[in-house]
Length: 505
Image (tube, rainbow, N blue to C red; front, side):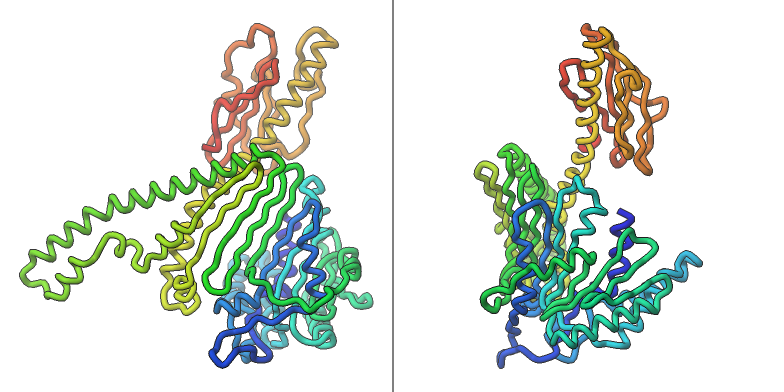
């Protein structure tokens, strides 16, 4: 994780270009509506790798669709990446509070300031992050396969000049070494396990390791010039043996968020469906609670205004006409979004959709009101955040289940050989480093080893288990603190697991 965070910081100067909202040449019609432009065939061929089969993940963001929807400026005079001024307003204050430790942040802020003054930013049309490999490879190995590809406007010569400028700014920062290797410029940092290189090609900029960038030549250009996609955002993940998942946000007026899961096991898809439907149920229950709280208060206020002799007639009329629905959802955006949510499943194939109506999009892009964005964020947060937290928690529980199964097998093999059960060193049970759980046999425990984990003390519930069962299998237990709750698992001689104290509820 530290490696990933460091890389994200070091590449921020370049990646801010992915948010560039400027337009070098106008592309609006007489009516003022922006018309998305195609990316180069070479850039399209590289981004097409997002559709390759095999373990990995990809994220593609179409900045041209952002412009068409009005989320990004199409003003040809606006060349500055979005968020740059905000970063330069925040970073100096943050760096000054860190003292000597904030020196790298100071250097980064100065580099951003120089970049802003230079102002020769490429026009970004599409942005992609491509990862190949499975989680078993580890973050460092996956990072070596990562490619950040930015489809841009401008000639290859202009983009090469931009790359030279970025290299110069990197060399101006202490601790950074930039070297040219043909069409590549590679940067080395003491804090990173490998070099990070940048490359330019016809209509694209790319970031990755030297090996990953050399592989770009294997991508053949498309047969025809590609057109802009209607997908504003597309995220694809393939994780064997779980299956494939895809999330898209698409549309040219109203937007539709669509999630598709193609699980290898129908049971896995069924569990995800249950989680989503439970989230919707909680959302509806929360909305009904809100109505129950606000309804009586609104009615009381309406009666009070109606009986107030000094209240203006216009106030009495507007108060009497106000409904609870209009009070809580004035423009009907929440109702429209909630009505658009659908979930369907057939075997291991699960689809979930959510629509954002065109009036809401217009209000958000015009800046006439922040309420639509808040309402939509509330809907998404109420559905996604609790379930994401629970999913994270349950993924951590897989460690306890796997290690207790291994402990059971080790005990069974030891019993066959020695005709008795043993302790950790006797049976050869030694979990890998970085465990979140502490493991106990008959009250004697191996402490967790993950950074920041908190081994339970004398109140360890694994030390308070009852007597061993009739088969004599020792009391075997795993315990961890997940969030602010204890999570406790046990396993018996038959290999049956039990979550006797839930930490994810």
